[in-house]
Length: 221
Ligand code: DC
Image (cartoon, rainbow, N blue to C red; front, side, top):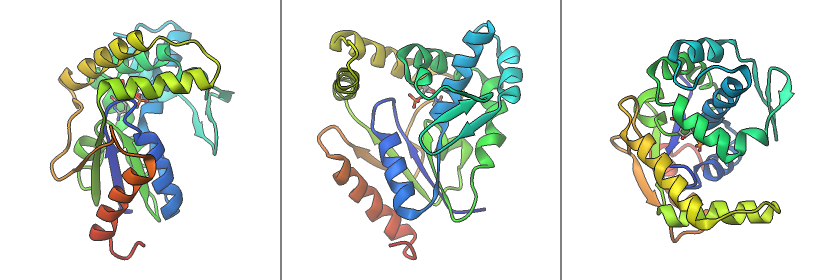
């Protein structure tokens, strides 16, 4: 199997940014597994499939035609890059992600992304379930307040309205659901380097991650 680096952590911990930067630096592919759950949550709402209907959702997951392009993601040919980033899609994603049938349906799809020269995979269960044999495992965390503040700044920058108090409450609620579900709960996998990014810049986080990558895979610079 191609080399794999996993980056797990809660929503807003910065794992997407770090995974992308790392993949670009190494010239590897990047898998945003959260986007898969977001695509499914969105597709279910569009198709009128209940977010609790495990079998219906698993079928929908197998029927989705997904195309990750440079800057955008297509679902059955439509550009859904923006709509899957909304809080509504994030909440739907968190609900469908709690169902074992859904996780099983998406497992092989994710494993098939591990191709040469290598894969950086970001999500909640990359190091524990999807790629337990990964070469390097990172768990990126940050306080709920800091993650809500980052999200708030992103929304304001885009000219959208936002309320910090309700963002903190939503993040806590989603964390609770992700950490306490019975299948693939969010937690640091064994052997992972835990990085708390609350008080770190993106470059500082990336350097800590790169130190671990160089230690484990010295052939990479
Ligand atoms: O990282 P994100 O916010 O885009 O993820 C959206 C939701 O999908 C989140 O609530 C948890 C879920 N998820 C998951 O259960 N497993 C993954 N590997 C990735 C995301």
